[in-house]
Length: 342
Image (tube, rainbow, N blue to C red; front, side, top):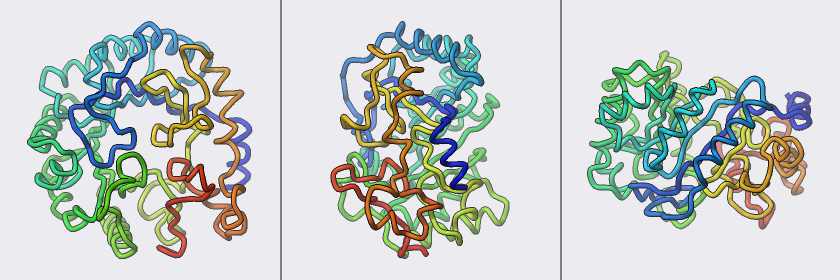
């Protein structure tokens, strides 16, 4: 595994390109990593996206999957213009959405524009979800949005739930809801110490909660249900392959790059945005050159950056963990499951 990771750091493979089309959002989620909301910040021109998509098509074979996000991406007024162009060029693409704006007509337009997959956020039962997302009626609209999507035979309609202290007791009820909706998969993740969540009290899971969460996922998967944990964090050998289909590897800068709403080029959109994590901007830099010749910060193991990680016996499995939960001021990992789970 460590040899493969070292090779990947030398020869990264762009599999996923995230497009943050807007910072504007019609919800005000307590945990938002990008602090999105009623944001009227400058958005890069449509023609700049066209140029980026042309460049990537010319320089990368096979094409990376486009992962469209925001904010709420459907609030970008040129959304369908951009994504229809990507579809015409042969890109596969999926979207993360709160689904509150997905009417039957919108679902059809998404199908016509070539959308393959979508992940819809359901962060608890109705009261919990609406409180967490600070949007009255958001739960009902999201559920209706999912129902509007399902008849159009997308490759995957997934739901994603961020589990907190407020929702850990709702796992069984949420599972029943996902079964009733008959979504293709349910992605269950824990609250991360990023963005607005850094200012939250009483929401982070403790050791007992984490074990409850991972035991729940493992149990459902053993019964054959398409329930999975997210891509973040090394969980130890007891849980690692039991709660998802792969072993942990932070994809940031190895498989994944992102274009932020202002044109900045980075790795994962959840990573803190600061000078050393921003690698360029598509308004002034060639994306291909940036991907191959920058990103050094993401192609050196985090485990080399402090003594605790450097001497840890799990460093060959986790490489220091996820880049989005790394504290770049103190050079330490904020989320480490060693001594919590194993």
